Image 1 (cartoon, rainbow, N blue to C red):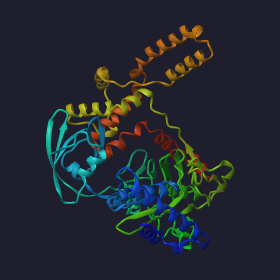
Image 2 (cartoon, rainbow, N blue to C red):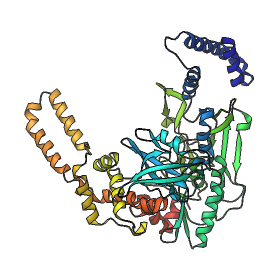
Image 3 (cartoon, one colour):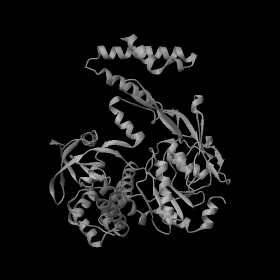
Image 4 (spheres, rainbow, N blue to C red):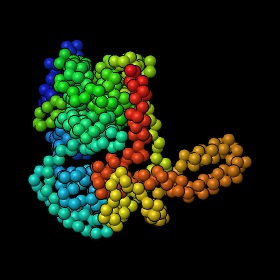
Length: 541
């Protein structure tokens, strides 16, 4: 057993690639691992599964590195393929769990779920006659996925219509990298980019050409909540706006083949059109290459919030038995020379990576001489601080009351105005308040927490008896104030309701278009694009 495990691991890791001075240390620890594995497998009091033991060991080893180095078993091949290509076989819809059931969240237009007439809010009862009650969303997903061309019967429950049966044929689902493009207002072309799977560069290029043909004189590329993807697609997207031959990324790794310089290879679409990139804390990896490179080259202004800060490059390695792994092999540097990696995985404290120390951060210059800093993601040129949801809004969302009210609204209203014209009537908001009268959505405000802390501290300091009357008055006043939260936060709650309702009629387009009127980032975009002097000043011209 020990010899077999030893040889297996030697083959898997390829000792020929190790430094000579490391050979003994590696051999010793593989020998120890084989001994531990053998003892657990043969003498542990309960029955163990050898495959699970090894998988736990692999996962534990990789977890000590960084979150992006992962092992994929043969059974996980489909999940990994989706990460890389954006393609899977299924029905084309997101889902969510409420109580004991999984619900349709948002079907993608022109894919099986949409073709079958499924709507957000449909409760999934059975798949091919098998009850879905009590199953996790991951389990239901496995029932919905399958080989393209295969069919199944889906039983749902829809508010206002009762139980419905749907026959659905699975297809290969390839979600567009650009799910939306349009001229919103003031000749501003808007492109929403959600991923960097194959053809992302072509989709952006085509969108820019299309929007220009329709009269767009300014361009906005929205990378908010885009977690990245393929490096070469990021280069292709930058190339849409900058000339051929520009250096966009330099990667540096342990081996010579990992040290590469990536330049734009094609003719651009437009190197002059005013351009703004939207980013936030969930814009990562390839999104940061695009936004960072366009900032370093002074080709675009960035609006929003600091990006995620992932400056690491992963490479796919094919392993035996149809397994594979994604492993970090290099770090990337954008045109100014900065590395935007925020966390230092090489120096962990109590097993957790820490942020790059301020003393280690360096200042670089963009092409026009603007100062930019490494080690903290990409910083926007125009910072927009987004307000957080109120406690009452968070409680309503957490308890799915807004989602369920939108289902009720859809059951009683077959049509809705176009997203940009849709405004929730006061009468509907009043109905919403009535809907909530028998619903549970308890929440604690920050003020209530502060009062609790005050009472606790007063007790510790032996002042509570003196202050108890005043503390009770504060609690009473706070309780009375909370009764009016649905009124005090009406505008915020109406915006959330509009978003949830409109996607039941217009799907992805609806979600995007309904958001423009209350999007603080979009307000800043319009401000900058309407003031050429300010736009050029921020670019360092």
